[in-house]
Image (cartoon, rainbow, N blue to C red; front, top):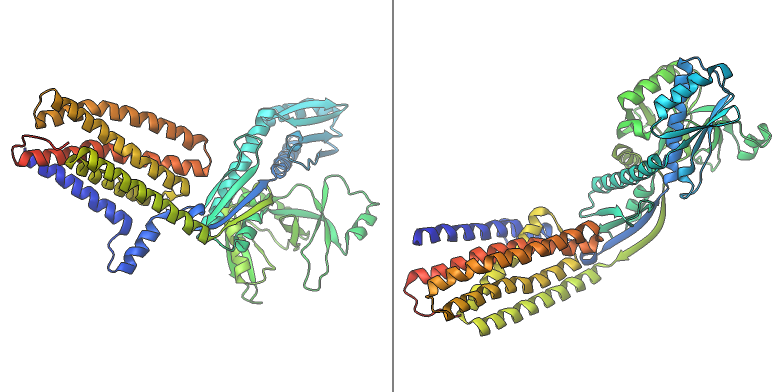
Length: 538
């Protein structure tokens, strides 16, 4: 009997040591102990202070980009099938509400090749696009299911890209999530704990880094008016006018580009900041993926001597002349310094956003407010803990010490679990811990009352303890399982703050099963095994 108790006590001691290591590590000084604790216990925005941003993903950009890729595919397929046509163009939705109304029109189609064209469109695009006729033209409209999938994919990719950019900057405990729950909601909530001045991060987040390489039709022009006058105020079909970056002298240039890019940021595989060995100026080089490199090589080989515009976020960064075939790399010049080149490389490497972002809101939480929240949360938690321990000692006498030790160990295990899992402690999380104090004691109350009932029926202390734990066990498991299920629903459907509450409560409940059922039982057994106990202090 005593040997089995030693094993159980060893398990408890090992658990305590593992928990303490997760919380404070192996400190060599008091300062290191405090630093380890602060590093291991991660605080949320409401406790640590920081910034909160709300951005809106302009999903209509992704719909236009998808249509442009479809247009390029149709041109390639019609070229292979020797199908003549006048033009392939699309409309230009400008708002979120109109994003799904994207249309592609095939004009001037050879009447003798209409059937072949329809067959190609059905085979290549039939799952995503509906085909109809407008006179002799063909019109493609995006299906509702495909539009919904594209919208969802755009939001997920934007969220993932923003997370990569923030994490690459070393902002710890950041959070990026969809603000609403509906499929049409395109707003993202970004929380940055510990960031008091988010200017640079906000600039990197808002930088869409939509890299596109367009064929140049005409340009540069000294101004938009000069460009429009050359075309009698109407741009040619299938073209787009974009402005270049302002020069150091403050001048601007305009270019007339083909609407469909040769390659885009989706084709970028790697990117890094580099320095031109001849001029010493900083620039950003990029490497294309295998598929993008093939398309880029095919285009540059067929268009030597022509200009190719490097466009970043709808601004022409440069428009060099193609001097030879280029396979898989390129470079973007014009960076002001190393930091600017590195930031651009970061956002390109993290992945270009599938759509531009619109800044909606910024809110800062000062660290003093977080300190007040921590202090008040600790005060309330300690006050509740002292009150509960006092009540247990008064009502259950020596058995109250048993419950108090289990309660303290419960708190230690919970804090260690937060540290090991890297969970972020928020103010609602502290509320969950305070609530857990009452729930943990409730388990001990169930056990103790069962033991009292067994003692009242005439059983001895050892038999009463065994029967009390055995009968209370199923009730404890039942109550904990129902609470865990409720917390799971809160985690799935709740906001960030509600999720913090649910995580803290679930971790505490799991720890409570261990402390209330196992640890408390070991303490009782240890007391009863040392000597013959006639009466149990409960």
